[in-house]
Length: 178
Image 1 (tube, rainbow, N blue to C red):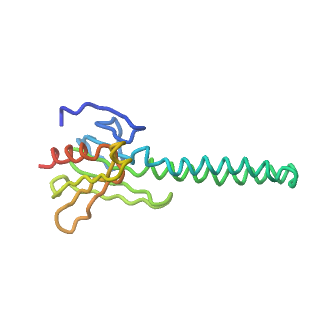
Image 2: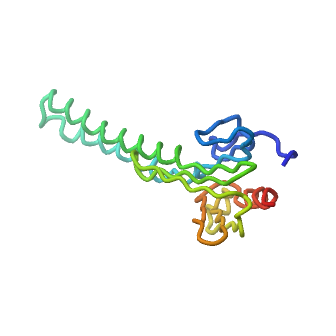
Image 3: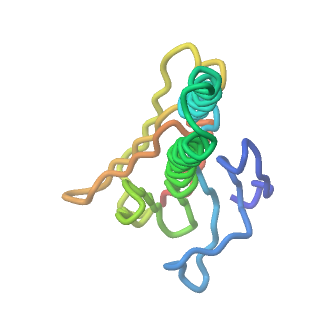
């Protein structure tokens, strides 16, 4: 693992040896990888947001003569608040759903809602199998997919969904496993 050079790319969705710290990090534990969903997988909600803004602008022209200035202003504030809340919650979901691979363990942090966090972790010594799956045109073109980490016994399995370079992640985890 000494041959890996620190790098950040793809909007910080694939960070090798980042200089981050996380709340449960042990004293001598070193971060190897920090993973998020590939940015291209976020296009649906970005496109939806743009469409909603265009619809709001269109509705302004459609109802311009029927509503007073105050009503139009209130409707625009209300519409923009909904659109920006949609953007904010989707961004937070992408940003805080993180996979962390260290020299000691693998951690999967999932935010299912703003107030609910699920943290799954396993020691590298308990890893039985690592599988990368990638399918479809966009996944092939943009090199993203899923990585599944199977653990021994009744331990919970870990999955990283839509991450960049799944084959490389699998190789790095396999090199870390004792």
